[in-house]
Structures are given as C-alpha cells and as structure tokens.
Image 1 (cartoon, rainbow, N blue to C red):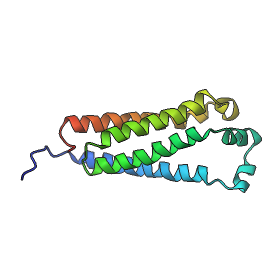
Image 2: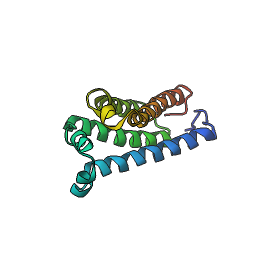
Image 3: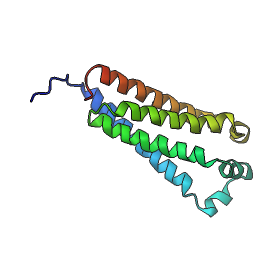
Image 4: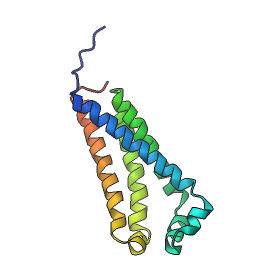
Length: 144
C-alpha cells in the first residue's frame, strides 16, 4: 500500500512544532491561572482580584478547551491528521468565548488599560491562522 499524498514542505514541520510549543505554553498559563495561590491573589490590586473572582466557570472551561484543544490539534498537525482541523476550530471557539468575555463583558480595559487587549487579540489571530493553515494543509492533501 503506497501513500500518494503530497509531501508537505519543511515549513509545515516548523509551523507544526511552533504551534505545539505555543499551545503548550497556553496549557502552562491556564494551569497557573487555575492554581493561583491565595498569596498571589491577595498580592494583586483589588480591581484585578475582582476580575479574577468574577470569572464564570464556563469561561474557565472555555479556556481549558482552548488550550488543550489547541495542543491536541497541534499534535494532530504534526502527525498529518485531518482531525486537527475540527479540533483547531473547537479551540478557536473556546478562545472566542474566553476572550470575548474578558474584553466585552468585564471591566478588563478599565482595570488594566488597552494594553490588556493586545494579548487576547494576538492569541485570537494565531488561532484563526492555525485554523486557516490546517484547512489549507488539508486542501493540499498533506493531512490524512
């Protein structure tokens, strides 16, 4: 049985590895946020403590889905598996829920300034790119 699928360029491997590292960092930031010690929480300004305390469980769940899904999808991309595409989409949805809540439904900007929006925008753009890239890789026959 032969594999007639086209071989992806080296940039595919590089992009897949960078995506995996990026999403693994996301897991670490997620774990740091959900395992925040009482000392670290009380060291925050009161307004930031209030933001942290008012985060609904569904938003925390969306965060978990986003980072774990993105990491799983990156592994799928490395393995050249087509299931990476829908998993990247689920991850993006998790990001949109989490970031949308933080930017539009909280006092994030008033509390931390417009600079607090830069990270979420970058994270969202990277996720959109990974959805596009994985769909493009699938269309080119690089994913099975």
